Image (cartoon, rainbow, N blue to C red; front, side, top):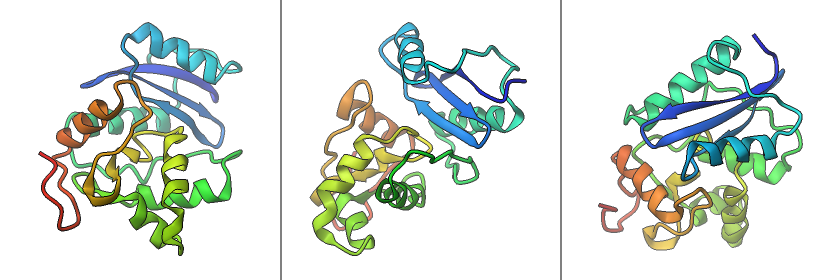
Amino acid sequence: MNPTGFALFDTAIGACGIAWGPRGLVGVQLPEAQEGATRSRMARRFPALRECGDGEAPPDVQRAIASIRALLDGEALDLAEIVLDLEGISEFHRRVYAIARRIPPGRTRTYGDIAEELGDKGLARAVGQALGLNPFAPVVPCHRVLAAGGKWGGFSAHGGAASKLRMLAIEGARPDSDTEPLF
C-alpha cells in the first residue's frame, strides 16, 4: 500500500478521483465528461503523486472510496469520519468547509446561512467563493449549499448546476427554509 497517491473509482455519476497523503485526503475530484479527463485533471492537480491501482490505497482511503460511492448511490451517509489534510487551506476556507460538512444528505443551506454562522451575513459571496474552490467535493458537500431564496446557484464541477442538481436529487434534497421544493 502506498502512503501517497491518487486513484480513480467508478460511481453512479461517473469516474471520480481521490488523492491522499500521510495526513489524510488531499483532494477529491468529481467526474469530468470522460474518465481520461478525470485522470488528466488528477495528474495536473497532484503532479507529485502517482496513480495507484485497486488495492494499493491504504485502508482508510479504501473506506473513503466506499463511502463516497455509497453516498453517490443515494445512501444517506455522513462523510465526517473521512480525514482531510487541510494543509495550505486558509483558516476562512477551513471554517466554511467545517460548516458545510455538517449539512446532512438530503438537506440544504444557503451561502447566507453559512455566512451568518460565521458571524457576518455580508460574507455570503466569500462563502460562495470558498466553496467554488473546494478541493474535497463531495466530502465537503458544497452541492448542498444554495444561493439566496433556495436558488441552486453555481457549481464548479463538470456539468455546472446540472451536476449539482443531479447530486441533490440523488440525495432526495429538500430546502431547509420556507422556499419551494427543489424538485
